[in-house]
Amino acid sequence: MKKNTILITDSLFILSRHEKLIKTAGFEIHRIDNPKLSEDELCDAITGKVGYILGGVETVTKKVVESADQLKAIAFTGAGYTEFIPANKEATKKGILISNAPGGNADAVAEYTIMLMLMMTRDVLNLGRVGKASFKTTISLKDKTVGIIGLGKIGLLVANNLRALGIRDLLYYSQHRKFHFESGLGLKFVPKDDLLSRSHIVSTHISKEAGEEFISGSDLKLMPKGSILINAAFPEAVDLKTLHRLLKEEKIYAAFDRPPNEDFSDLPPHVCFYSNSQTGFNTTDAIETVSDMATRSIINLLTKHNDTFCVNK
Image (cartoon, rainbow, N blue to C red; front, side, top):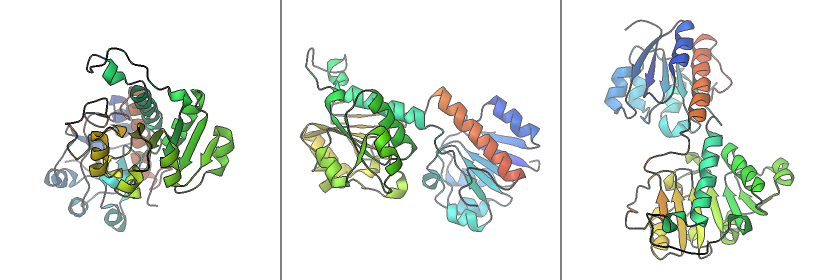
């Protein structure tokens, strides 16, 4: 293996034009077209590499960091890098710079979230060919109160899109109150339990750092009968066992942008929909944007030892 080689995993991100930019900057590329490298496979692949663009769903563990004998930088092709680089502190101690791509796929995820809301409120899965209903009067998204949990880049875009659709009542709960967005978007900050008890639709956009079961079983029980939970974050943000029970009783409905770890296959799609794999981020525009960000970052980190999106300066 030549010196100054960058490891790239999977083939979704980093297109041919990005590869040319990397090579023009003086680096070789070693690409492994596998989105799910095992720990041992990644340990072997990362040995001798100076850079690493994490384009799959593999996990950078402590063992992987220890195997990285020449690694100087990791560029993650998403925002929530801590989920895929749990050994980020060990990497930092070793002097390995890490960057992410915040907001690179935010438009795509926000768009997908709105799609899930419309699909569930208009009962598309029950009224379409996969369902059993032939005619039904449904609720309208426009007339409902929507609560957003997590007002980061995606949450803000969802709020903006909902306002454009004519939603009048928009509530939000976030770790940090965003006063400067409230008047412009007509958002009202409320405590989490208040949001859950008042919203017809709850949309979650929190990072994994918020912790599993951020929406607990007691939180879920606050939701009004017939309300809808949209989870475009990670499935375990919700108490899945309690959620399953409430869905089984059709007290509430839900839609996920990733299959839950619990078995929800006994529930009809119109009660609980989930993507076959994480889908919201995956549009051609988002892939281009994130690839641009990751390519620029890895080159900057390796040549200038800094980048706008470096998370551990």
